[in-house]
Image 1 (tube, protein in one colour):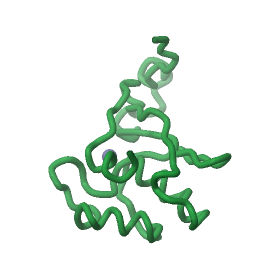
Image 2 (cartoon, helix red, strand yellow):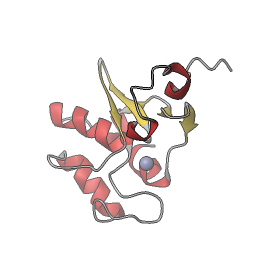
Image 3 (spheres, protein in one colour):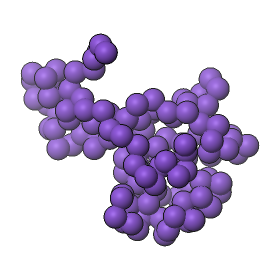
Length: 119
Ligand SMILES: [Zn+2]
């Protein structure tokens, strides 16, 4: 397989971006002709009702269940944006790009929390 993505560490010769300031993970959520690229970070209100209901089945939002803090994955943040813009979207209707770690260009596997929500 051809790897087209280089890590920012290799691209960034002038060092204006500190590696530690990059998000841990980025992903692109896609629904029909809409998409949202977002990163892993704390999921904050407003949270789409359908997404919130499914997250709460796993546990309290922000609680680390040993897999990841619930709701903090890039999948949740990117999907939330699309679901807030169009309330009729169901979780299973959203598709995702591969997830990447920009610091290393490493592909990140979907965590078990996100598998429950989106697979
Ligand atoms: Zn996840």
